[in-house]
Image 1 (cartoon, rainbow, N blue to C red):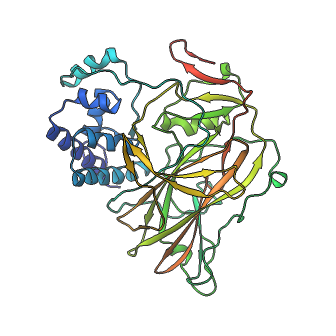
Image 2: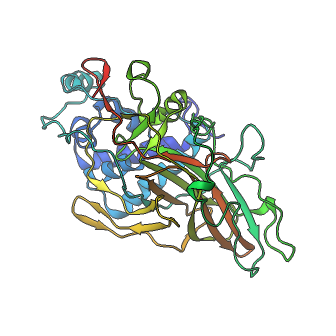
Image 3: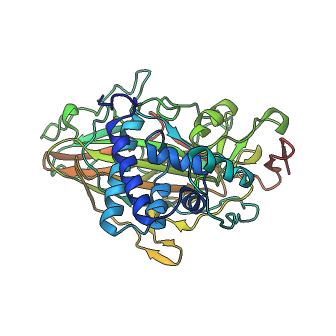
Length: 431
């Protein structure tokens, strides 16, 4: 893997940091002023611009570009650089810096440490205590990037099972066929009532991920071979709204539950508690072509693998309130529907409408697509996954998106169960 000598950081991360510095210098703003706009600390922003760390979220890059007054072409170039650096980071080339909560009293000290004057500006306003998300949207963002080296396919039956399973079919053979049922089972057909919590997968714990898995044999009349499936997928299944707004269900009492983690550590935190997404789950899928030809993403099909009565567990909110000026364009999934569908919904960026996403979408080795899907339930403990239908000059097929061969899981919160938020000043969970 290519790295810059001397810093130990990837060349892609250094190129992204260079773009950050150029925009910052062109804007004439201090690190302190920009840090307040991004709701982070000056030292964290300095680490981004020096190549010592990489933002974990695309929204941080977008806000930085807007705060610097970047031209559209410059913003696209910055997003391109981030996407490439993030792909290398997913393969283990660079660490991710997640900004800690900022103590306003420490801002001047941080600015002094890096030799940058801080400007006076009001502290970011936080919203009130968050409400449980019952049916929030998902986002689909399509961004340009240069080619990256994604991981090779792996056997999904092995210890590093892939995140998706491609099921190729013949071109003109009647369309793609999924690996799961066409419709989810009814409540009476669902899995037993006793739940088992999700385990952390290697990809979510920081280990490289992104392979599509081992496809089944191609159809007799033709189609792509398992080795030539023309796309890869990297999946994140613990994405929080605005990077802070999420809730989990856990059976343990508050005294046995550690403080909420930062978003990047959520998979391990949830696995340790056998926690389940409470009411809403945001899944982010990054798709990239692997060959010289473009691949057309035709549709997302929602599969429900099991429905049970909602868990009667405690609700633990990851944040007592956080603000975000962007509601991304979205695909929403209502798992309570008899036949759930991924429905596109327009977003909003501080009063400016963001067009709803729409299939078909085209990807290639230089044009990835990032799909952000939010599924919700107010009435069941649901197991679910997605089938992504695709076509290419070499054939067509279906890519299963799931938790390394297992369905994802969401449970509605029982209304009579307590809801806890973490009181940092007291060092404990409280209602």
